[in-house]
Each structure stands twice: as structure tokens, then as C-alpha cells.
Length: 99
Image (cartoon, rainbow, N blue to C red; front, side, top):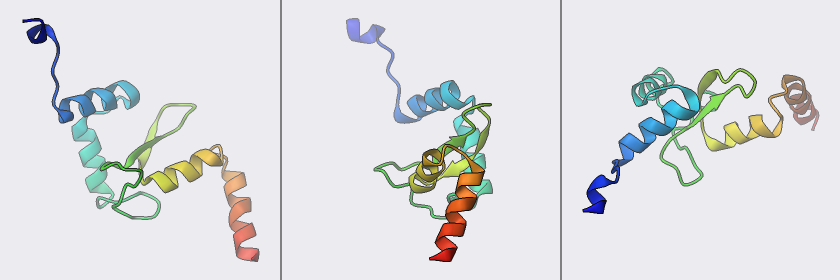
């Protein structure tokens, strides 16, 4: 009967616990944010999360921890690769416009 003493969670329970621990948000908060973004990435609008996930990434400020929105993995990675530096992003945009 040792199995009875183990905590068993369904996928929604695990997701709820992870969202709460990492971002301080509930699954309901995530769903409301997703609906407010028309069920797509806050930057590019795609509804395809990518990276073998069925969920968009929770984007947050790494300094304050404040959640900014839900992003596809490409947009989320791009921000991270630029170290959230808006000046570097602006310079990259200028560079691409000059090409």
C-alpha cells in the first residue's frame, strides 16, 4: 500500500503547481492571459507554441519576476538571447532594415 501514500497528480494539477511556484500564477490566470492575447503569442500572434509543447511560454522579467505575457518559444528565446536589452534589439532591427 506504499503507492497510496504517494501524491498522484493529473497533468493539470502538475501544471498548476509549476505555474504557482515559478510565476505566482494559477492555471486560471494563465488561461485568462491567453484569452486576452487572442490565444496567440503576444509578439508575433502565432498560436503554435513550438518546442514540442502545447503551451506558450510565460515571459517574465528576470530582475523583478513580473509576468509580461505569453510567448511562442521563438519570441521568448529571442528576448533571452538579447539579454532583455531593448537597445540591442533596436540595433538588430536597424541592422535588418539596412540589409
